[in-house]
Image 1: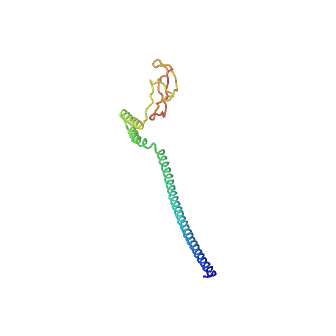
Image 2: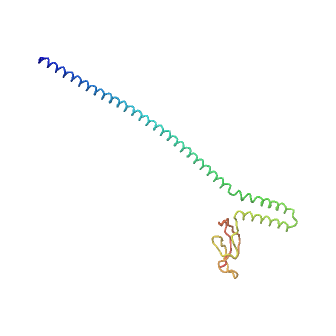
Image 3: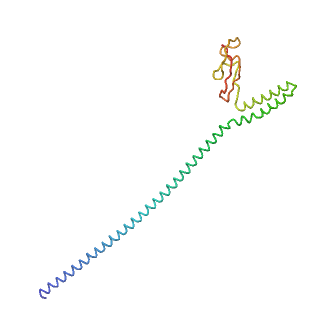
Length: 203
């Protein structure tokens, strides 16, 4: 083989090797490009999925907020209605607080009216007196049932919380500071004095 033919063969071989190398490099570049494209598409898909998840969470939070707001409004309305009902019941109680006592006094009033009607033609004053005393005892019973009691009077130590001293007088029967006479009875409602007794006190 001549020298020229040898060189030509070597050149041809080099060209083939270069072409093979170029093809390999191109193949690698093509694979890398495909991988990058696949990765990009995967990332885009992942971004879309994440965005959809976030939108779904936002919608869920909006729905929960709306429900909580509705619950608050209902609870607030219920509270307002409850307050109004309690205030109305309180007003009714104050307005009609004496109803029970008045109902208990009505039979006493009936008996007084009967006694007054009977006294117009009554000849027996003792019977009239007994009738009035009976009605008086009935009235006392009604007051006792309501917790009304008489303030202790004559013979009791003077108590400014229960007695109103209108006179003072020396007494040989009582020591100083005792109630010796009662001009007007005092009354208590349970543990509260609603009217003090008007009394004379020994000096």
